[in-house]
View 1: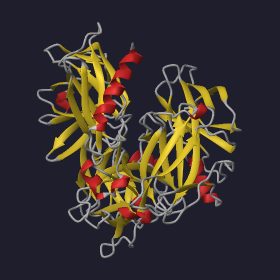
View 2 (view 1 turned 60 degrees about the vertical axis):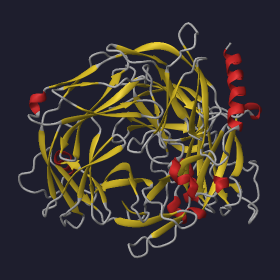
View 3 (view 1 turned 45 degrees about the vertical axis):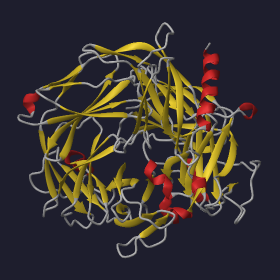
View 4 (view 1 turned 180 degrees about the horizontal axis):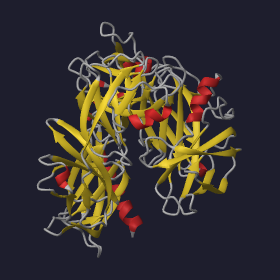
Length: 633
């Protein structure tokens, strides 16, 4: 029955696609929506949601709503090349709302069938211990945990708020205190889809002072202080003439909030508590500091000025730039702490933006909105991933205000990668990560758990820096492929450079994480790394078919094996894909079928500021199916 429905929908879709304009960036999503007994669910609403980056909640989502017709069918215009989260629901009542399950990885030309399977409960969330923050105003951000996060902002009234209809298996609830136009994060918790009457404890009010210093002991005056929670940075204030800022906050332990400082010269620092700094010794601290106060000594940074323009030189005004970086802290000359961060900001009316970071590293990626697609040559547009990867690596200019780095999209090149399995069958939903090789402006695919995803035909299209060596990691289940390639200069008259990669046989480490008490450790993250080793993996793909780099005859890419050890080490770092443990503490970590001299496993809490507790493994490129790891901490 399901096959017959899909065939009928595919035939309908072919007719509809023939009516579409080839110039549009959208195509039709189609499907059927049924009641539990199989009858058409007439009048139900189908919601299709996609974010340019699934985890970047500060970036606008594309949300399309369609109504089911009398035959139980729907059609909706969605962006090509984007994976959508889709569900159907009926009219809401005072007690609930009928809904289908969520269908993930929905692409143009991929018929789906949705069916009424459940009733979503109406739920209120209650805040306990409001007396800890008298007269404070609170705001909630509720994040429905779909592949494309669905974000809702709610004002709390009298300690209670009606939650939105949540269709994912769980939701993240973030609590903020409203201070004028600023939001101070206080608390973060998870709410399961089955949990009724959730309550959130307002943390005790704590006053802390942030002390920001340069490594030459100069106070950082006028520095911006941020609170980093999840995937988002929240501005909370500016340091005074003594380089300090006093905040009212909650108890941050176990919540995953980190405090960062951004200097006017672009330096990025991460604070440690005075209690942690005192344990290091040899630190001269101001009189009267409290253990909860925060301390940061940070090296000078760099404010890189960049201007983004279209193929015809028009400024890309209001373009979203996703920047990633590493904040540091040197409490003593012999110590250093790190914290990875990323955020999204927009260019001004001239297409210009100032990006902070270390003097040797400023990584940024451009997000294309639908309105930006006409800025690209027509053959490059169809089905393009919204992330323009590492455009700074082919920019001109020095990055000063007088001579900004100019990012000209003509210096990029479109690629189309296709992934196949046994029998050359296309593989859908392959996770793809990219990294640049051999450049100080190195970039990885935007930080966090975001990936590009192959469509139902195993394809992904991306704009990458032309003529620059690039590393790629493609993961599907326990199959992990790592390669490097380089493209020709971008040809605006031609379509993408194409390459097909056969995924290797599944291999990796399957194991179980146990606590010191011998009990399974659930909801942890495990990842593999070479640690501080300088030895790369023993890469060898000499039998990989190569195309020739053809100048002036379209867009072409060539698979290569970097000869320099630095690039090979960067490729090796792509094995570091964090995977979760399940309720029994089990994890499945894909690894490439090549030997690694000394492989380290690390583990930590899902939202930990860093992963810790290493475990050394000998990896010869062959599966390990019974690893048992008892943690030390």
